[in-house]
Image 1 (cartoon, one colour):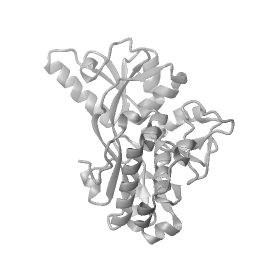
Image 2 (cartoon, rainbow, N blue to C red):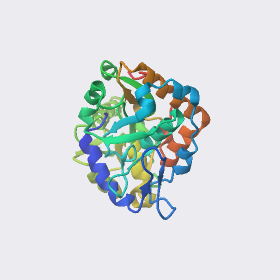
Image 3 (cartoon, one colour):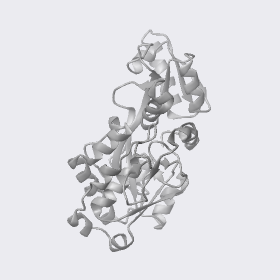
Image 4 (cartoon, rainbow, N blue to C red):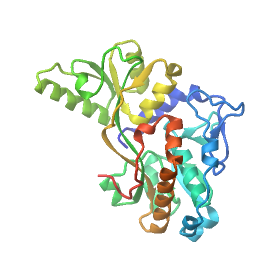
Length: 315
């Protein structure tokens, strides 16, 4: 991951109050919904999108026999909104990754069950055969490809979050020169801000004042009060915070490609090429028929959409 798991836990705590009154169907049933029929703030109702996925018999035939019988057993670290997290009931997994997993399973004609697992245990559990897949905002990297295979499904990277209406005129990394920028201590965001500040001074522009804190909450408070002009965050988190904080009235994300972007990948045991290829083909079919795009758009993270579900496409 490009960010620490601690940071993601803090993010979940900050948005927990925003997922009240939401619900969802059981794994395999498709989508997230709310009993009253209207989605809670920041929680889209994606049930119709996922339930509309039709089984592809040919793709289903390519699945390993055990998956055909028992369905997909997928593990995530369920604490990272909007990727994957728990609904207000504390037990229903929701998020755009959850919806994509359900759509892939539906295309393959099987069910999918989610297991909450420590991020550090995902790869070893996959290698040991305890689970079939991982989908947890895990970066597809060459180092990890030595251990498992990946089917890429999303592009993430560093994103600039600013105050609503962009009063400080920040349009990209070059406009951060001379600004106060908040990051979380020890993340890739801090490293990028330091490097960007050096580029500013080399170009004869003012340096960036980098404020490193222990949490996103601190950074958001500083941005709201004007003590900093921008926050650096991962794309999905920044988009979700911008949509939910203050009912979307506090922050916005600077448009453009993620900075230092790279793919998230669905992890598969390297020995299970049949499952890997089936998942890749199912995801590619969802991209082609528009289901993939609709899910990402519903969660507001279409900025990270991919056009091709590559196998081991990370660097």
